Image (tube, rainbow, N blue to C red; front, side):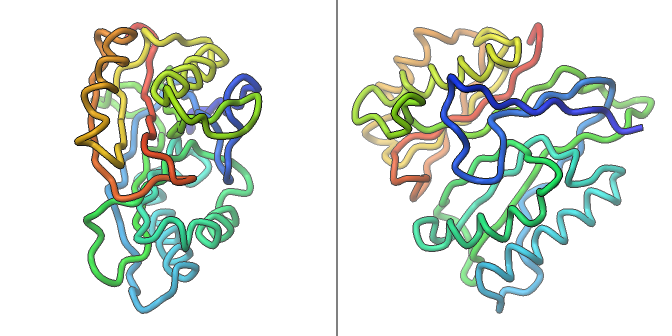
Length: 235
């Protein structure tokens, strides 16, 4: 039997700007299934076609590992041109997740090969098996940008502080805390400018969390920082 997943959407954090949830939590015994970054098998297709064929491929790979799209914790979406293709990708993507809404992080990296309009990876859960570590209690949160949940708009200063407030609200709504975070993925549009001040802010709040700094070309809504987290009780 596949483990159940609790979907998190709290009012004190920004609402999703696409067909995804703020976070998902594994409830019950299970094992992780990782699908590494994949691309469409047909690069002659446009963004709609590549999204469709890519998600079909991801679904097949999950089924081979004893999971499915409904048991995806988080999708990682990498786009060639985020500002041009985000809405079309979102529309096609949503057709594949009508029964569930995994957490998601979407960025525009600098390393997609020619012809690739979108690539995806994902983390899902499957039935527990002997010899595999249990992932019970694991939480994966969507990438957060510096949106004020009251106004629904990006703030123009103190971006890391706002993002941490958003993550804290999601974690608390899930009955977790910042101290339960085991990993932060920090996507930076301007790493030369933002890395040191951002780390200073993070280190004031977080002491035992692994932080991964990832430079990107573009982020949703034109912002310069996006942060996602993984948390686990006692982590």
